[in-house]
Image 1 (cartoon, rainbow, N blue to C red):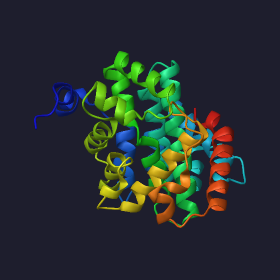
Image 2 (image 1 turned 60 degrees about the vertical axis):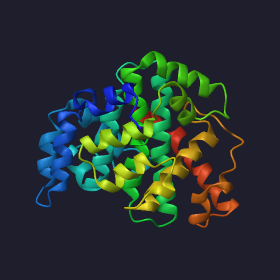
Image 3 (image 1 turned 180 degrees about the vertical axis):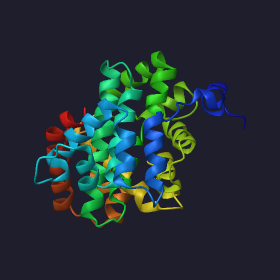
Amino acid sequence: MDQPPIFKQIIQTTGDLPTIPAVANLVMQKISDPDTSPQDLQQIISTDQALAARILKIGNSTFYGCSRNITRLSDAIVIIGFNSIRSLVMTSALRDLLKSFGLAEKLLWEHSLGCAFASRIIAKSIKFSKVEESFLAGLLHDIGKVVLNLKLPDKMSRIIQEVYGNPLKTFLESEQEMLGFDHAQIGQLVVKKWNFAEEIEEAIGNHHRPEKAKILPPLSFVVQLGNAFCHKLEIGPTKNPDLDIMELTATRLFKLDGKAVSRLLDETRETFDSQQSAFM
């Protein structure tokens, strides 16, 4: 079956897909190089004063549990670690990609950040080795929605209003009805263009269909669960406080009982409430 014209217009035309910011791209490349030193990263990040300030601010937050005040970027890079620096750089890049900050952008941002926190918390709880990858995949899982908001703001606004007002209606259903494709498909192509690892690309493309993941299925299930936590906690445009987390495949896969889920939900809420301002 031929792909819908809008799908072709947005996805298959490479120029229509957003490019990764230059500084973020350089940081990602350097972090992938085993010979990179903290000084190398400091030189790159220092060229973006806003980014450097954000990293220092978050480095001093309780999120990374630093026991002393960090005043120098070089110290933040060493203490936080390369993988966490990558997450913070992409957090800044995603925030900048949202550009204007009306209600739609605010809801998308809160949900992206909430899912990043939840995914990281879940990964640590189940002793999954890809903790920062979980944060990053959670952060970017809805980047397809960000692209839709940039390219088709009127339609995206209608979709958000429809989902916001009806907890039984999902984004995927509304997108398929209105556009003929969904944000997960777009998001997977965006991070592919940005040269992310295949397991992160897969998790973003399959966060609503984690059973289809082949490369690193647990990562897709972590993001599915983190996404569901945000729906349950009403973080973002989809608000579903009656969602039964225990019915999700991910919950059973990770052998989480009701007590564990309740604890993780509480930790996610507490983390979001206490840390979101630092990440802004």
